Amino acid sequence: MANQSLELDALFRSLADPTRRAILARLAHGPASVTELAEPFDMALPSFMGHLKKLEDGGLIDTTKEGRVRTCTLRTGALAPARDWMTAQRLLWEGRLDRLEEYLATLTEGPKP
Amino acid sequence: MANQSLELDALFRSLADPTRRAILARLAHGPASVTELAEPFDMALPSFMGHLKKLEDGGLIDTTKEGRVRTCTLRTGALAPARDWMTAQRLLWEGRLDRLEEYLATLTEGPKP
DNA sequence: TGATTGGTTAGCCATATGCCTAAGTTCCAC
DNA sequence: GTGGAACTTAGGCATATGGCTAACCAATCA
Picture 1: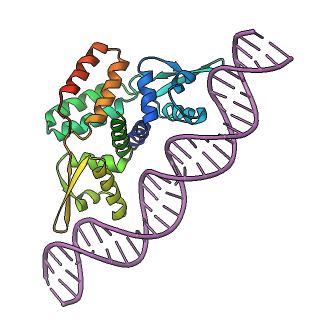
Picture 2 (picture 1 turned 30 degrees about the horizontal axis):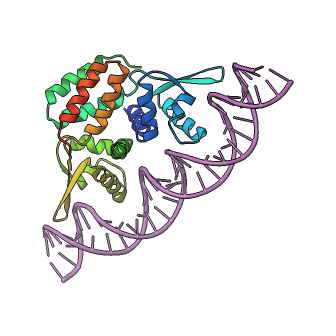
Picture 3 (picture 1 turned 120 degrees about the vertical axis):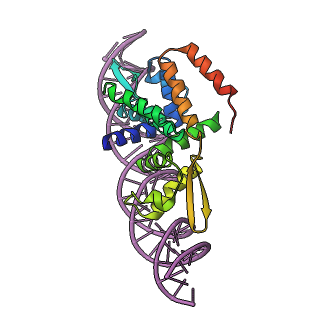
């Protein structure tokens, strides 16, 4: 549970920045190199690389180096824990406890990474 | 758009802390006073109050004072923009552009706060 | 009316964050 | 072999964050 809390900390912190959200939104269209990703931003490259590192350490993206080009790829399902937490709260708020129970049942059945 | 970006910054930053997430999860069960909310936490009251202020400034909760008791209430739909952004990314990732279009149509029809 | 309760304000500290520049390394095209 | 491209590392700076204690204030109770 504490581990899940740390994971959610990192996930939501990763999303609490417009640059990183823009990176994720771009990668949703497909993999891209660092240079491609950085091009729309008026930001020093080492600063931009810092954001990529944050996303990689947070488990949101994978990066691979081929020659001098580093390619970034969105990690499938990486946002699921954050989305699941928000969905759980919404179901509680709306008072649909029976739906919450069904929903939690689907969580325990799913595979864990 | 920039305004939406700032709103998402504040929303995700509010969620990037275990104490604030626990507050929201508790309030999902119904309103509570500051003292009730703070009781499970081993934290100085001014520090805890700081978290409540963050949540209120971020539009996630409302607070009202009656006599010396301040009661906190979850604001309905407050997490919707964050959830919507995550849903939009997921639909992109899964390549279901037609579903994305349908989804975006529902957004533009909905009332804006 | 004094004591207690439920916050509120102010100031401080350690750490994290997001940006910068400068310099460097690895790879590749010419 | 060399210059340029694509990163990578190091150090610095300003601001934000999350916690603390101390003192205070407003409301209520005995």
